[in-house]
Structure formats: structure tokens, C-alpha cells
Length: 483
Picture 1: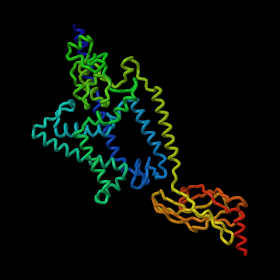
Picture 2 (picture 1 turned 90 degrees about the vertical axis):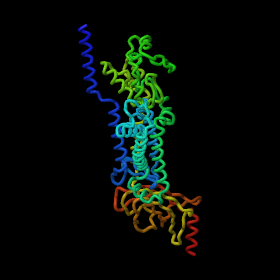
Picture 3 (picture 1 turned 120 degrees about the horizontal axis):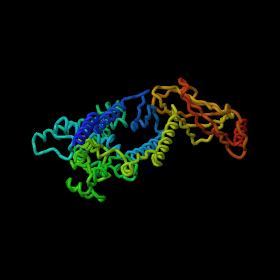
Picture 4 (picture 1 turned 135 degrees about the horizontal axis):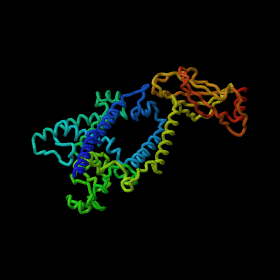
């Protein structure tokens, strides 16, 4: 008897020591939420050489990626970004289930800010964070006032969050200028206000129903899961079955639980149920509504830890639960997603490294050529230059692969200011008989190198043709000239 007492006391001491050093998942999530929030708010303001980390700027028709600016003609990078996005979602979901929902999703972060911080901690409208099933008693006048204050506080944050979202499409420095003259920018103002109102309605009134009934990710994840996917799992082998395989409740009290399994450890305290933000019972098994926030694991750890036992709700996989083996992380699907993501990143950085520091489009005019009285053959083109740098440059060009073809117009280099396009009518000529073909006009491939006179790193090449006339037509012009 004394030995049992000593063992029980030792077990309690170990439990107390464990709980003393234990850091709940909830606190880890809060730290991660703060990190994600700071990054998302600060990142739009960081610029290197005038470029943002990520900015899909519809106003100036530009994409900023990793502090490099790409113009509309260079949006061939977008498929690679979408590739990374989709395969990233597949990879994360297959590996960790709805870990995005519980740890990074703006909807979850906003609900934690509103429900746990504003309503519970600041205004005490809710009594406890550990019980999310009890809604505030709105029959009390005091609670009605608190509710209004909570909505006003969140509304302020909602407008900041909506602005932050817009900053990834409109640079924050431009956004602050635009909102000073709202009547000049009705679409921007409407989008900002509309997004903020949606966030208010979503977080205050729709709540987690968005996650349960609207969010498509919950449906996508159901086909991406496998038996080795990490998720929040109730250990029915230790705790006992509370629900049958059809999801029907089969245990209502401890006596019924003991009748089913004598060694069942679940205390039926329902702490895991009370704390769940999506209002599910994790003991029922995998459910689409579970967002892997692990608050039920925290609740069970606290209860079972006080009894000197491990939590019945853990972050593991069904394979590990059923077999007692380790979760197979590097399985075929995970390796395949890693390979696809690696290929996408390699392609993205490779294509990004091909960025040109100026843009040039060359189009020929409708006139194939012109033969001057002195025997000079001219071809006309329209060159469209665009300065994609942040400072003014002086541009010119040359024909690099045929010394017999020269520039008749323009004669001198010209300036192009940052972000602007300049159209130039270009005339190339030759005073040599390049081809003596009596059957047809001859297109001669040529290479144009355009460059910045004041910056040697800025240079692009384009291929086009110079059309030389049929030899008999050329000779006829010369005969007419002599007569």
C-alpha cells in the first residue's frame, strides 16, 4: 500500500514538473500569428533599389518579385508562381493536413484577435478562452455596450488589414496619396471599403462558419489526406471509443465507458469539445471542420497531465496511431511534391535571371523597302523602347551582324525616363548590292543590339529582317535614274 502511495505521489510530481515546463500550442500559435502579422504589414514597405519583395501592380502594369521588377511583357513568370502556389498547397496539406488553417490563415488569425484578444482579454465579454461554446449573454445592457466597442475596435483593424491586402497590388506609398483624394480613385476606395466591410461581417457575424461551410480548402484537403498525414488525432486505444464508426455517440457517462473498455482513460470532461473554435468533438475522428489548431490537444494535456498521463489528443498520423510505428514522412507523394516544387523554383529563378533591363519591340512598316535614286535601299521600322529602370537613360542601337546595313534615322541617342515608353521610327539603309536574286525579294536576317549609352549593363538584342529588292527591280531603278 505504501509502495502504491509513493508511486502515485511520484507520478503526480512528474506531472507537475511536466506541466510547469509545458508550452501550450496556443501560445506557440500566438507567437506565430504575431510573426506572420508583422511580416505581412512590414513587407510592403521594404524596398531595395525601388522594388518590392512582392507587388502585382495593376496600376503601373508591373510585377515585383524578390525585389526585382518585371513589366507586363515579362509576366511569363506568373505560371511558375501559380505552379508553386498549387503544389505548395498540395505538399503542405498532404504532410500536415489543415495546418495552414490553424496556424497561418488570415481568417483564423482575425478570429483569434477578435474573440480571444478583444472580446475575452480586453473587454471580458467572454468569460474564458478555454470555453468557446458559450456565447456572451447579450440580454445585459453592459454586454451590448461591450459588443459595440468590440465591433468598433475590430472595424479599425479591419480597415488596416484591408489596406495591407491592397498594398500587395498598389504600393503603399501610392495608396496613401490616393486616399487623400478619394473622389479621384473611386474603384480603389470602393475595393478598400468593400474588403473591410467583408472582414467585419466575416469575423463578427459569420465566424467559423466560413471555415466550415464556405472555404473550399476544407473540401480540397479531403482528397489530399492519406494515412500518414499529420493531424490532430484522438487516441481511442487509450481513451476508449466515444463514438461508433458512423459518428453516433455511444458513451454518455463513465460507467458506459468502463463497460466498453475497462482501461479507458478518457475522463469525459469534454474540455477538448469546449475549447474547439469550429465546435466539433475530436473524439469522433477526422472531420473536415478540424483546422488543426491543436487547442483540444492543449486542453487534454492539461487534464491528463494533472493525472500524470500523456494527452489523449496528439499531433500524429493515423498510421502511427494504428501501428505504433513512426509516421512515414518521405513517402512517394511527398517526394513527388518536393520534386515538382524544386523544379518550379529552379524554373522561376532561371527565368527571372533572364530579366532584361530595357524592353524593345521591333515592328516593320507596311512598306517593304524604298529604292532611292542614288541606289540606296531603305527599310522602315517602328522601335518601341521602354525604360524599366528607376532612372533616366540615353538609348541607341546598332546592327551587329551586317556591316553593310547602317542607320539612317535616328542619328543620335535619345533619352527615356523611368517606366516610360518611347516610339521611334527607324530607317536602316544599305548602298551595296547585297543580293542578286531575279526571282524574289530577299529577306536578310539581321540582329539589332539596343543599349544604354550611359550604362553598359543595359543591353538587349532582337532579330528582324532587312528586305533587299529583286535584282531586276533594283536594276530598273538604276536604268531609270541614268535616263
